[in-house]
Structure formats: structure tokens, C-alpha cells
Length: 156
Image 1 (cartoon, rainbow, N blue to C red):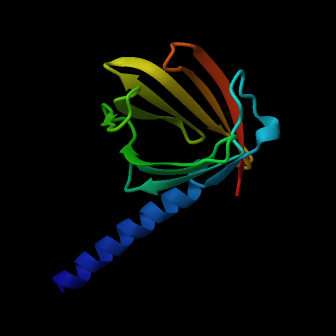
Image 2: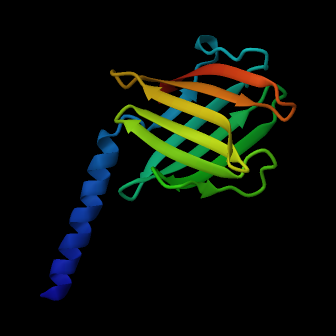
């Protein structure tokens, strides 16, 4: 009988996490709409696709494919928890910590730090109809130039 109860509990938790992810407007595959986006002084990429997936009860898996203006492909993948003190990053000379904050059901923020100082901030907002996500980026380049851009993504 114990095995049956454990199995039922595991199935119930798995179903609950799946339902939470299905209802979460942020969790989707998003494709950059270059025409609706503003990149300031930088050249926009040819394409960018972001896939956001729920992990557990409070986590996020981010998978990103970018083709830059020169046609070079870049990949960015990570898994992190919302509201923690930050996830350490390796192999990035400009950032050493990533902090995910969930503002509300349609809004999240990603803060990147270097030596405790905020160097980049991404603010993601999904429209109430769930069809678009606007990402506002503020940060500094390696040369300490301030950059601001607004990217609009369409749900796929």
C-alpha cells in the first residue's frame, strides 16, 4: 500500500507543477520581432529565440538561440531559481552572478552583477493577451558605455 500512496503523491505533484507551468504566461517560446524592437546604437541580431520553461516549483530553464548580424550563432542556456541570492556564472568576464526576481504573473527581472555591482538588468513583461513579451535591457558594455534597448518577442 505504501508504494501506491507514494506513487499517487509523486503523480499529483508532477501534475500540479505541469498545470502551474501551463498557466504561466512567461513560460513559452518567444521569437524576436526585429521590426518592433529598438536597439539603440547596436546592430540588431538577424534572429533570436528564447524558450522559458518552469523547473520545479520556483525555477526557470532559459534556452536562447541568437544569430547575430554577421550570421554567427550563439547559445545561452541556464537554470536558476527565482528569489534566491543569485546563481554564480562561469566563463563570463563581465558578469559573475545572475539573480531572478518574479515581480508578478506577467513580469520578471534578471539582474546580472560583477563583483557585487549591478551591470545589467533585463525586465520582461508579457502582455495581458499573452501574445507578446517586451524585454527592456539596461546595462554597460565592456567599455562602460551605457546601453538601453527594448526588444519585442512574439509567442510561438
